[in-house]
Length: 170
Image 1 (cartoon, rainbow, N blue to C red):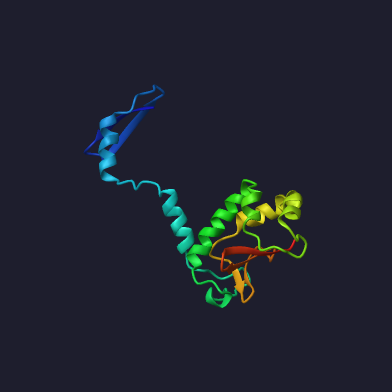
Image 2: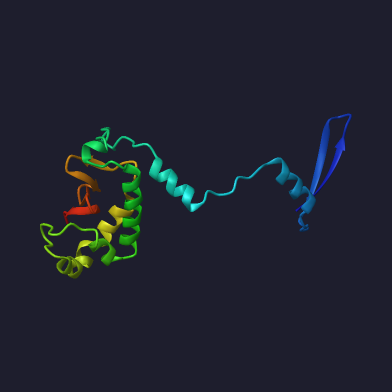
């Protein structure tokens, strides 16, 4: 759109006439604006992950504060949050072997890795996948039994051989 303006300095009035002719942008104007308004580059994936992992714990929806990480046996909360990010990716992409490799068998309903793998599709249905995906890292419930996702569907604990799933309540 092209503007034609007449400025009348004595009367402090102006009149504009617009026409529907298309014009091309003057790149010198755009380049000049770029210098005036610095644009930060978008955060990298590493920066986004670091921000999630290092975010302070927030209150739960009911107004309660999470227990301390040490009370749940976790000496490295950031390490556990990084593990949870990997776990969320495994669930999203159905990497059931990776998930099974991080389960402390026997579980109540799944005594062996083979029984877990055979039931994987039933366990990790759309609703559980959505719960895992929506779990905020700054709102992880924990107590002396470990840390959980959702409303206790999946429990984790730090064991000598790494973080492990210790319960699946489906």
